[in-house]
Length: 238
Image 1 (cartoon, rainbow, N blue to C red):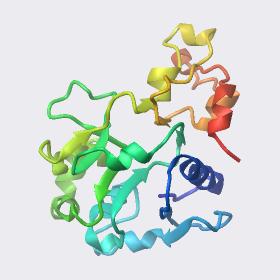
Image 2: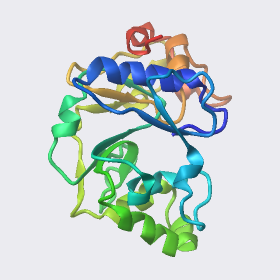
Image 3: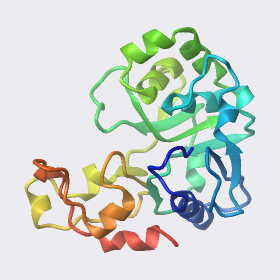
Image 4: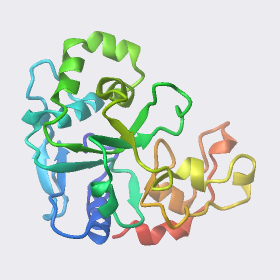
């Protein structure tokens, strides 16, 4: 999904390149967006408004819940990928991993019970979890007040019985697993995760291109400083 101007079309194009390189066989790569300009022709673009099929829906991050509904018009085994991540190795196992709904065990909220998923990468069967959106639409005011964001509500609505976490080594966080902790980040460069990692997630900042070039961090937050990481370049294809 891409809307607004935070992510340019090159994010879509490079993500497609990463998937094409690391996923065997035929697949459909779909981007719901409000701006199709400069997106490569191999990407199937669909209007973001297609996810507003219920009059109670509004544009924004909560529309990610609509992807689970039969009216989203998706088919088969679906893997959702945020735009700001890098594909490092084969994705084949992510489609074969057992479980009705597979998601990242959120690094920030790992000690919370029941667990909370990080929706940067999750897999679902098209149309099989329409009840998640219905729960949200029937209780929007409560959901937006009680839950910090869409992924917290998603974890609640899917429930522990249906939710399965990816193996921890498969999907890693750049900030938590590659960038040295403060104050080591001030003089040590980030390192790529171990060879078993399939996907590297860039939640918050820096984004991939900032991590490659180096990121000064926001004023007064030296722990955010990131020295250049050119090792990421091969995984950020042109």
